[in-house]
Amino acid sequence: MTLLHHKKLPGHSLLSGREPPDEIGFRSDQLQIWYNNTNESWVGDGEIPHMHTTSDECFIVLKGSIEVEVEGKRSIINEREFCCFPVGVYHAVTKVFPPVETLMLRAPSVEDKVYQPAPTPNK
Image 1 (cartoon, rainbow, N blue to C red):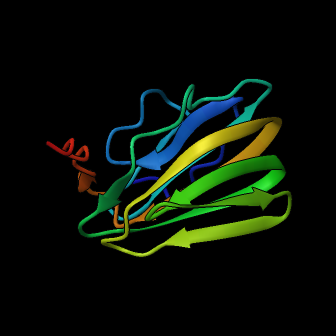
Image 2 (image 1 turned 30 degrees about the vertical axis):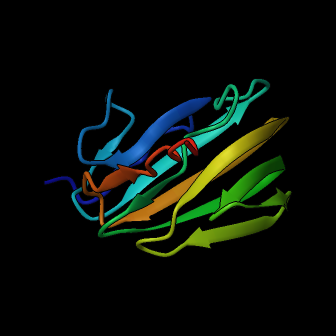
């Protein structure tokens, strides 16, 4: 095992997690880190609300801003602010206001994402 994993930040990448897609990422079962530095939104029309059954998640906004939804309530997270989603809380990134630079941290790095069921229509 290498004692130091040191790389230049890419534009958008999984920096740490269970299965990094390239040599930039650090393989870890304990910590997941996504880095975004982009002039485009990565969420399109917004994510489907989801929760994590085992892990906590944190977004750190270094530049720009994002809009998040937590159990139906939306909030703007601005530059030099962060937000955290505890295990079991439905949340989503609904908008990205580029240019934006963010870090997403989640621990432990496990496959525990559960999407919120779609509401059933009233009959």
